[in-house]
Image 1 (cartoon, one colour):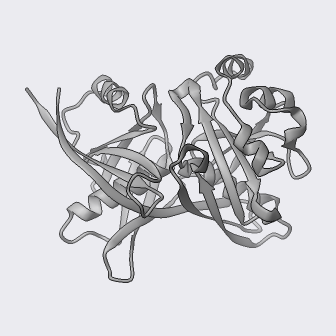
Image 2 (image 1 turned 60 degrees about the vertical axis):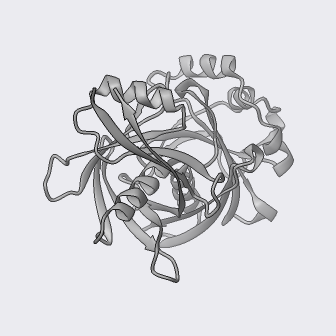
Length: 302
């Protein structure tokens, strides 16, 4: 019976049992897509990654990312964690990895601590910011179990933002309102039915400016239609949020960094460092970075 080694890591934290857990299969050659999806469902984590040989030998790997219910074109914590795992298993790791993914090429910069030990990674999102469908505030509020006046619309109305994977992004009025948010699966299903193509990807990312500071944020992400009721740390959503914040900032040449808390309400505190830059040409590019902690190793038979 074929067997495959796996590693789990907690991502966007320097404390075991914090952050966002991730399962990584560093050598997934021989697994079918159906098996990968079944394995992701068995782990039942936000995402599980499967590392395969690249199509282009100039790249380091092809990485496929699965939630318990569906495959994603791109995600943040799976890339940070997969880069960390590959680097720690390599006796002479490169400074950067290039991963082939459905959304495009993802560049992963390996980070080290003051003692030169591998500590985490910073990734560059595969696509520049796109902002598409506006979502009615009352629809958004129903999905999050909030009142309409809990949603702020002075900076932007609820909208779909993406740097590789789309999220419905909305600003919430207070930390108290953010803590009250609870996903209503029925409302999610009704909302997804109104927007073709979002049946499995109607994922909601809420944020609050801590003490009114646009660079210090707290977030929560709900994606119940993808099998993730709440995510402790969502790199792709926070990369999109960082890019959105920069796109709204005055000026044509703007670069900003963001300190983003997530997972507080779940008891899995996470810290993500977002970055984004826009130029006069209009494109807004984003990065997301964080630390990782190894947790488990094992072997799965299929």
